[in-house]
Structures are given as C-alpha cells and as structure tokens.
Length: 79
Image 1 (cartoon, one colour):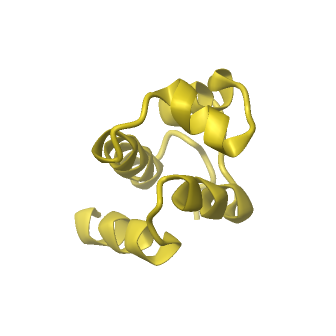
Image 2 (cartoon, rainbow, N blue to C red):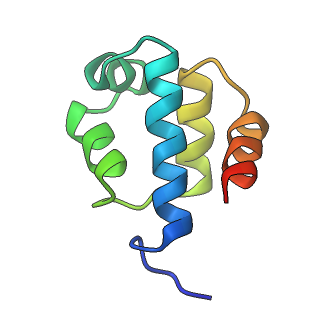
C-alpha cells in the first residue's frame, strides 16, 4: 500500500474535506478557529502538504457538524 500524500485516494479525501467545509459555509479561518488551530493547519491539509491522522479527521468532522462516518462514506463513494 502506497503511503504517499500524493495518491489519487488521498487527493479524493482532500476534495471531500474542502467540499464539506464549503457546504458548511466556513472559511479556512473559521474552521481553524473551531479547531483551535492556526489557519495554516487547514490550508496545509487541504493542499496536501500535511497528512491527517484519524483523530484529526474526527475533530474536523465534528467542527464541520458532520459525522466522521458521513465523510468516509462520501470518500468511499467517489473512489
């Protein structure tokens, strides 16, 4: 299994996260504020320069007011 952040699957995950943020009507800064992180945290993971772990992905889902399961489902449907 390839572990690069440049895989097609990882790019798809980032697309799902960007879309979910946009659907929530949040800017990167607003999402970062909800996460108690700098805006650069959101920018870096959305651009693929920072890899997310499961705990961070769960926190992002909560900050977007969606379930982690719903994000995963969207990701899997679009692969």
